[in-house]
Image 1 (spheres, rainbow, N blue to C red):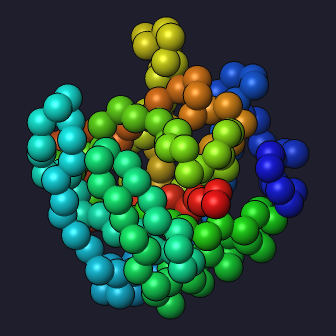
Image 2: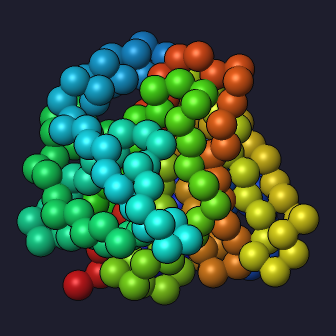
Length: 204
């Protein structure tokens, strides 16, 4: 871990083998808080659909996306540079709850709105240079539960699956981004929307 103290890792086993550090807290937010924050985040955030580079081709992202953060915290991935929108009140509230629960200070958040099970996220790692080595990524889920997959970069048949439920918090740290990829596949069973907020720290 890079800073602070991960305050619930002592009683939680990592989802991935050592030396990776991946922890899941399923009830980070209460059901009533989740319902309130889902509507607020969905309404306050400036959602966008952008083209990304995928295997040399330009394709539309299969979800709605936004980037919020402190001044100067630009973020670049898949050929797109995101300049931060100001923190919306609901997202700022979640950031404060995260800081209290984990001891980490995040200065940016990537938000994804999956409208239903047809929206997805392909295999990738959060290993952009501006995140530094062994970044801490805090992923908060609101709305519909979705399957989240990990696969080993070298042994791609080695996979770990977890359900990210409404109000859950997933922490990825250590060399996780170097050794594993993750994805959120399409789901015929998911008919409701899900919002995912992945909080990061941009290194200047």
